[in-house]
Image (tube, rainbow, N blue to C red; front, side, top):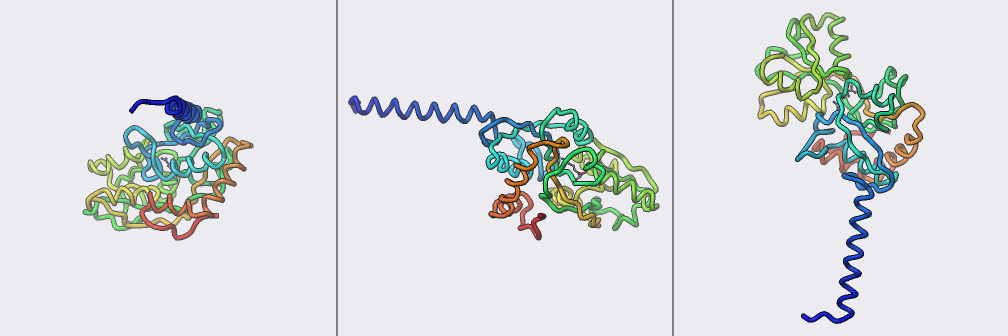
Length: 265
Ligand code: ARG
């Protein structure tokens, strides 16, 4: 079909529009697409379903939540994969601006960093192979228990040791995926870890693993900032709307597989 002048001008317009869209997308700088400035967000990206890698990209509950917060607050999250046990130190040294890493809000951590309003309710859990003799915390005895270093699971395991429920070794791992691998290899006998993450591992275990006790700690996850960060308020405002307008429930269903019992406020 021969192109008239109008056709050529139209083609030019379409090309120009496409170019501008591409430039805008690049300016945003990456996955989140929030536009505005880039914000560097650290996470231990080995904690499914909250953060893990799929085809080399970070995905999960926390990633969807943070991307959505960025869209609403006008920034683009740039994710940085770090080990959990140094994540607070890095935040305090300004190696990144924000942490989202299924991180429990605790009074001890609040002395060092600031948290957003809570965004997830969780407990601890005792995970064992399905053919294990261990049926509860009280039955751990001298079995070897794995935990991720620097986590509330580790703190709980140490408490059980002091109470005399754990008399054997507590072995620490850099990531929970290393601990899961050790459990699957029979190198350790049990794992104490956040319930939703161990539940996800059970769901993918073909019946090989089971949770034999929910350890009710009533933990709540928060997004973390260096003390006095001016981002905290914007993040809280975006988070409140996300909880309110049904987006939170959508993200929850997508990654947890059911509706939340309660949305933390
Ligand atoms: N909620 C626990 C804590 O704050 C475990 C978090 C571990 N997160 C991670 N991405 N590995 O201590």
